[in-house]
Length: 228
Image (cartoon, rainbow, N blue to C red):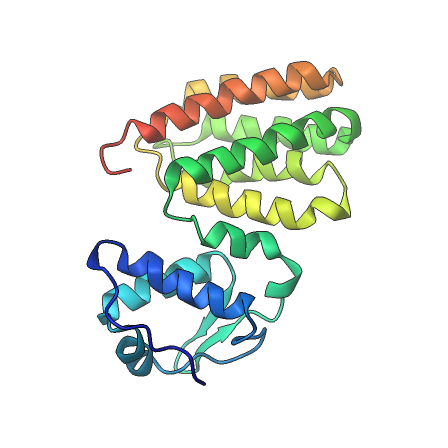
């Protein structure tokens, strides 16, 4: 496999630039779904980076499901990567926290208005039950439940055209969820209940408003961190 040699990459954004190069190789056809990447030592030499930098880049690509790492079996491009172009787009900005949050807001605010029209009674019941579980959670450890609450809303749009966007939404949600410095269960439950009630009333404008209030709160909490 050729085309990897890039020279010395600037140290301040090494991991992101390695990630960008691998994505670029996918986009220009040097890499294809199912291809196996060269061994780590060769990639480290080609990109002129350390093992921790390379592994950070590969970890980000794995989170985005663009590559799959098999124990003692190497790293492969996900066979399904071509069906989700939004993942590649998201990968290019995965470490731009404000951009990721805005992408999540843009997607989710549109999807929640569709959900107000299309969500089923069964899905509404699931949202209500998840919020009850969050309310009962201990140590504020409810990140998985939070993501599931938003996943149900997104998928209730039931639109195959936006399936790839939903995948990206969930990836963006996972990324932002990992950055939340502290959780406030009571506020989460309150916001979720307001969103649920708007969906129950089949009111897309109210659903949009309540979701925006919730996501704005999450954005402000994340951006208050000193390391983003």
